[in-house]
Image (cartoon, rainbow, N blue to C red; front, top):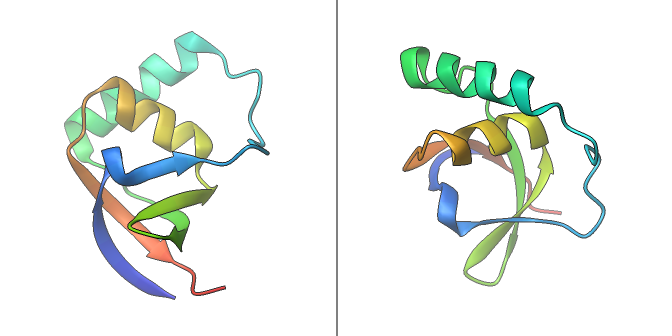
Length: 79
């Protein structure tokens, strides 16, 4: 896997999202933490055309989206 800074707008949530019932208050708390500290644990994504599909880190992705993070650290899986 390769670590890259990827635009949040280039990440797609797959049809099999693992976190369907996320708590809005907890996501807001995580978004505040990301605003202060950044994303400390990278998301895991797979390339799909010129975009990326989210594999792991659904809560972090939701929080990063909520706080309008431009780019974040992602581990890119080749398979």
